[in-house]
Length: 112
Length: 112
Image (cartoon, rainbow over all chains, first blue to last red; front, top):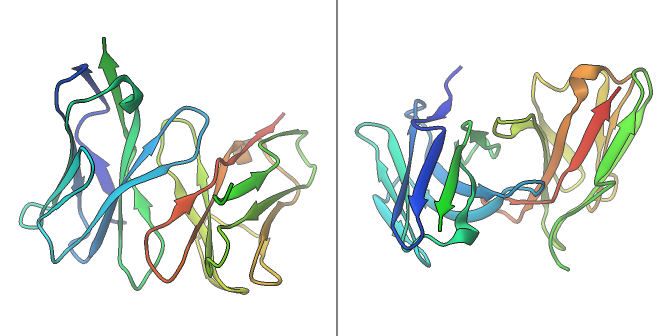
């Protein structure tokens, strides 16, 4: 079946730098996308979402970009902090389907 | 704490035993979801409730798995005759009339 996947399994960045985490999706019918952060031993924590009628959405220190032409999603974290170290998942959904389909995650490590 | 809660947080059981997990969603969230997550992977959808009605079930949900949400509030997930392959983190999420889902901390199941 169709699935969501991530380009890089690990990403290391220096504290204070910006981070970019990428995600490719294959279901062109998906109309809702969401990023989650998961720390060790905890459940996924909502970061930001975007609907397919938008190209960009900004939150606090985070920006999600959606390129429907190439079916690509990215999460940008500004001024990365040690507390940002975690696994980041993108997920897609058809709003009518309700369920989320997750990718395999990217481990972000922030170096001091 | 007004977030999603799950109990127990950890469960160790012997193969062949039955286990039951509980999820208490965010108050007034009408939708409740169960996911399973294995190490290094993203969560996989199991089933979804809207109020007390179970509306979707994944093919991952074998006959040994059953979920209930009798009063449209808390939910239970039971696994009968557990197998070693059932070892995973079982996550519960809830939402209110939107796709955005909030996750609980999960129940870590180990089948020995």
